Amino acid sequence: MLLAMTASVVLVTTTILILYETLRLTSEHLSELPVPPRARILAVVLMTFVGHTVAVWIYAGAYWLLVLRLGVGAFAGTPVTSFEDCLYFSVVAYTSLGFGDHFPTSHTRLLAGVEALNGLLLIGWSASFTYLAMERYWPLHGKAHAHRTARTSHDNGADPGRERFFPPAPGV
Image (cartoon, rainbow, N blue to C red; front, side, top):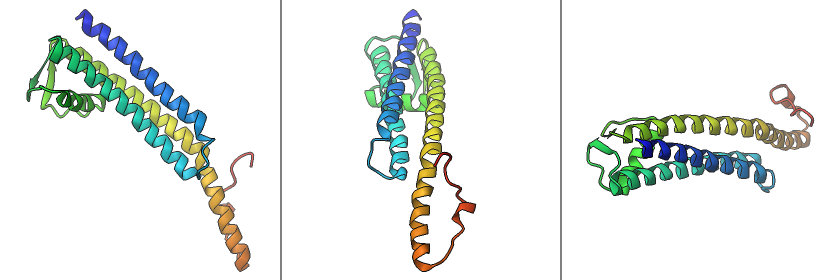
């Protein structure tokens, strides 16, 4: 049990640091990208997905090492015999999906429970990061569209009244 507890602490710390660095690097370099706001928001979503994928693979590696190689803990239900099975279980646990075809027994229960809690917290964290990025870049998307519309409307002599629906971003 002590090994499972230690592994849980190491895994939580490692996955938090990985997601932290993924989000930090994304945040630092996002404004440098010479792409429109839509592509920046897409980059945020893709990078958070990459961070979560790495976290899931780390947990899968831990299950593979602890259960299949060292014999610490076990799974019941459909047999878990390969890394791919560990990866599948990790995705199901991390996302709190819980299909139930593989389920942990013995010391693996602690690790799976911690992974579910860790996944929940990290997914929430990345959701708030994505929201903040969208809050920052969404008005720029509207502003770029408003400028195109204003140019087109000015050329046609029409006034679209766009400011009523998409007010300028604060400080612009």
